[in-house]
Amino acid sequence: MANGGPEIEQLIQLMARLPGLGPRSARRAVLQLIKKKDQLMVPLSAALDRAVAAVKTCEVCGNIDTASPCGICADPRRDNGMLIVVEDVADLWALERAGVGAVKYHVLGGVLSPLDGVGPDDLAIDGLLRRAPEFGEIVLAINATVEGQTTAHYVTDRLAGSGARVTRLAHGVPVGGELDYLDEGTLSQALKARTAI
Amino acid sequence: MANGGPEIEQLIQLMARLPGLGPRSARRAVLQLIKKKDQLMVPLSAALDRAVAAVKTCEVCGNIDTASPCGICADPRRDNGMLIVVEDVADLWALERAGVGAVKYHVLGGVLSPLDGVGPDDLAIDGLLRRAPEFGEIVLAINATVEGQTTAHYVTDRLAGSGARVTRLAHGVPVGGELDYLDEGTLSQALKARTAI
Ligand SMILES: [Zn+2]
Ligand SMILES: [Zn+2]
Image 1 (cartoon, each protein chain N blue to C red):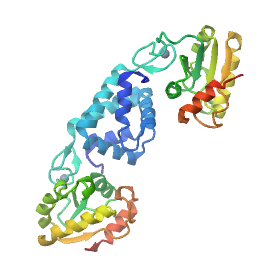
Image 2: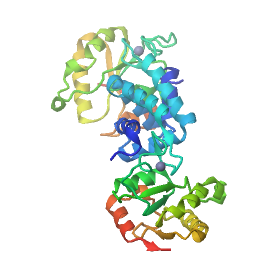
Image 3: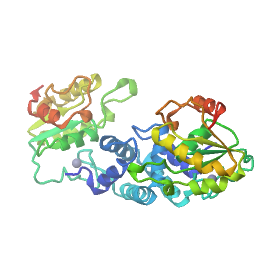
Image 4: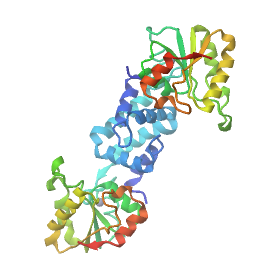
């Protein structure tokens, strides 16, 4: 039998679907929420309501923000010197935390993965081809996994006619590693030592 | 600068206060929520609203449920043969998942910890003393930590005049371990082999 009534059981099941939380840690998280009802559960509930209402995907770059175009695309201090292409919003946020400079971004929304049925039409490649001619340099900051490298090759081929200079992050990124788990110094170094493809 | 606007940043900061989630995993969890807005974020927001409105602490045993007395205290299939005393609601839920039988519970709400300023008045000991005479046996299912053992000794002394038979879980519980992390078979075994104090 479920403990704590259907409302609590449902909350546990939803929390258990978040990355990093299994069933046991979801139960502990929900108990913590309930124990700190006024300091944590009520504010979290309100914050979720506000986020549900406010969150948008930027129609230019694919970033997640509360406006579209997002704060980065609309930032007048950023020029079109460098467009950094990432798999995922988490990677964009990691590069911003690393303070890589007044750059802009393009979120592909994944990598090519025939086994998972992810083809070129499932990624934001057409949007990238439209934006590419506006930029001096396109930096592919795609995870150093097999699928990431395949995607980088594919994107490079598609960009060949655009006249844009295409580079990739330097091999400071560990092979098989994921950008979002790197420390900020490594990310900065890898961008500084980027190489032509 | 914060990524994603103040609504998203605030959500990340609240999620990071849950046990098991640090700042990085909170960001990943929030991104997952946003990506699965309709399947995950909207239902979680609604479930939190419902839980905030519905959750109560049982005035009899200290369990968390949507009614007081809770479903366990109100369950007519449970008699007063055995009252199991636990530190925390998480331990009560763990024992219920282990299927330990038609028992009742009493949640102390912590353990004695002079260094943290937790004394007898901070725990639900008076309520336990009131309930004790109704029960055939009081089982102390308190974590096998130093503070847990100190608390068990203290509770046993206080129960001495009540005439109740006081037992503890068998030493199948690893020394220094926490109940909530044990597998269900170990918990069942430890209850079956309980010993008089
Ligand atoms: Zn944007
Ligand atoms: Zn109860």
